[in-house]
Image 1 (tube, rainbow, N blue to C red):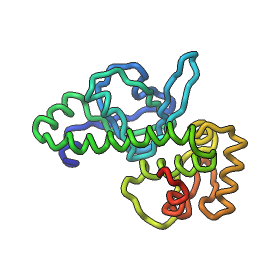
Image 2: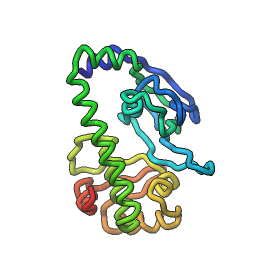
Image 3: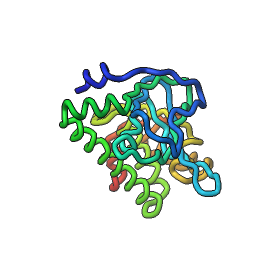
Length: 209
């Protein structure tokens, strides 16, 4: 299935700040980040832009809109110069006709994203800011390296400004929370990235993960 996806897709490059998929647009393809980083945002009523996620290589976007033919609910914007793998709607439907089991894989993928969304909503209302930070870092790890159960350090490429926006706290509050986690030996703070010393301990710190 992976070989078939690769053979049917195309690769495009986008410059920094280019809109790869606009909010409210008609879906034409699903995509995956190969190089660089993208921002997943949604403009709320009143014009405020809400940052939902920063996607690294391996991050997929667009499958649900492709299946339902609904307008896209978020925008995907190049945060750096990026290379994106794109599978067009026509090729998507062709693969699904040839191998119906493709829908099972896609359903599992969408279910994972749905669970992530529920955690995001629950975390924003029911748990402490520190737990929200742990939960979001754990989620970013999962999206960056699905199924990765390694014990060793993993670097999450996200700036403190972006992480603060995603978690819903001020930049100053986030810095204090990260320093607290650093003192506990869970993370190490770096420039535009956070090194998770032990992913298992970080996830174990969050009962909602």
